[in-house]
Length: 154
Image 1 (cartoon, rainbow, N blue to C red):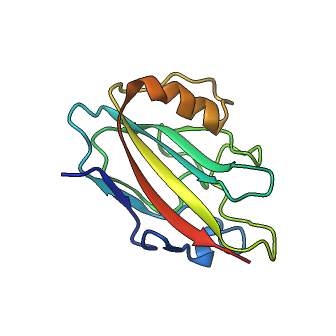
Image 2: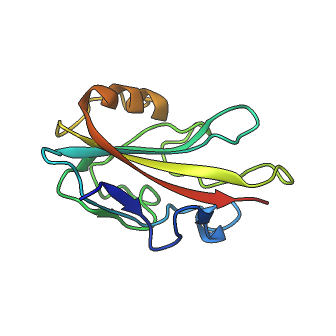
C-alpha cells in the first residue's frame, strides 16, 4: 500500500479554500494519511511554497507527530497548546501555521505539504529551530515521504 497524504478540504493539485489562507481564518487544513511504512515511529510535516518571489518559502512545520496517528485536525497550532507536537519557526518568524499569502497578481502558487515517516519516536530540536532545520534533522530517519499539493492565488 502506498504512503498517501490527503485532505478532506481540498484535492491534490486543486485550490486551497480561502479559509486556510491569510485571506481567511488562517488555520491549518485537516490532513489525513494512510500506508505509512513499516517501522514508522513518528512523523514530521512541512508546508512550503516554491513559487515565492524570493525562493522557497516555508509556511509550517510540525515534528514529533505520534507514529500511531493517521490525521491532523483543522487548526493545529492555533490557540492554546493542547498537544506535545514540536513546531518549527516558519519563514514569517512564527511557531505556527501561516497559510498561503502570495503577492497579488503573482499568479498561482503551489503549496507542497510533505509528511515524512520516521524510524524514531522524537526529534530533539531547539524550541526555536526553523522548519528547514527540523526537516534536515529528520532526513537520516526517513522511511518514506507522502506529498499533497494545493494551489492558491490572489
